[in-house]
Length: 145
Image (cartoon, rainbow, N blue to C red; front, side, top):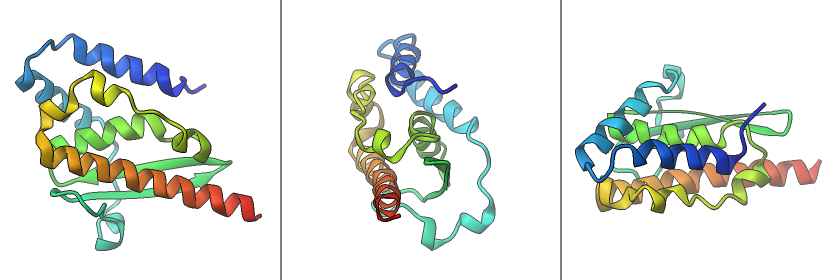
């Protein structure tokens, strides 16, 4: 059974709270999170699957099974891979409605913007937007059936 989205956000907030205000430790922790992301098949590492708006390369693909969106991703940088891993942890296996209605409050609570800088924050926003676009597409497709 999946944990509730907000329960996972609270877990992430708690994990980062142990790091205090140590920016370097937070960055290393983000990179560790990326290491836990399952490998993405090389067939998805093409231009078609790149998230637009990220300075680093982020490949994102989805499956839709039993009304749930399954996200898979990879990146060419460790920090970015860690960032997308947090979103996958929260959203993979959720309904399109749950994804679209999520308030990602953990981002502000852990001080993400000060940790990763403005360019990575913009890339992170692009990842969120792309994941929500996939959810919207699946929601629209379901409503037409």
